[in-house]
Length: 434
Image (tube, rainbow, N blue to C red):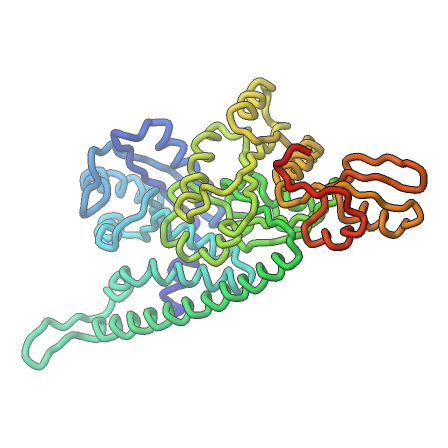
């Protein structure tokens, strides 16, 4: 079994990229998609020696691109000593087998490439389980490619298949059994996360999940906000495992900030399925922090890609705060103003230099404010410990002194309400005219 999985784990040195341009896809779209595929391949350790695409009305059922074009690319790859061909879309098992015969080298598609990167980046037990599950589900229908070197006996009386077929069935059974075990283990992971979430709910700390396109600066933002040491590199999928840290806002609110796996265009459905345990942090979040690289030339397409995945995991109706990152790399202030106007609520920041963080923290507090209660309190001035506690857990909006008493207008978490009931003048829910 290990030898099968190793086929996808080995990095390659010389790769050629191939894409398809359909009528509904503009020329700049295929070029940008191939550019992203090139970044993915380089992240996996490949050296890109060339790329090409074909204009198509429909996909060729046997070879994805036309056979003539495939042979043309094959000749070019032989001259360039290419050992791996990477297609920008997912191939069927049959297409991959046919293309291997034409190119006479390893054939990968975008899905297998992303799986290879994920396999190298997963650090926690949960992450490794999810990657292995996605790998095996991808591998199962493609097993026949790995046993063509074994002798196949033709059918007939007394001959019910050769070594290759029997070994193939053994591996299919083993993979199916392993998939079942992985799904059971991931169910346990989900239950453990439910216990963790119930603990958070007892504290009534809101959860804000950072989502966004891969390499948009999510991990850098988490590090800058909380002092974490999450890996943050200028690479696609630099981090894979989710990280949750506590953040104390200037308004004295405690917020849990969770960083999640980056999204990408053409993110395979099986990866979304495999990473549901991780993405549940997004589904259960009180607020989504959608981080976008404003300096990227295809920022609108990246926003759409993230929204597509959010819709797939049923999180698209969650309250969302747009964060336009890397403004220090944007030349025109007009671009920043345009996106802030068209995507509200929104802030513009540089996660690296912490530019715009005051606005970010203020907006984050505003977006989470509905879970707090507005209170008016009258506290005797000698109750210094009570007033100190009030400043510790609450957001004091107004304070005045009359005689021996101090009057406060304050917002506090509901779980702290009982501590100040003896001093309550009036309690109003958020959203009333206070």
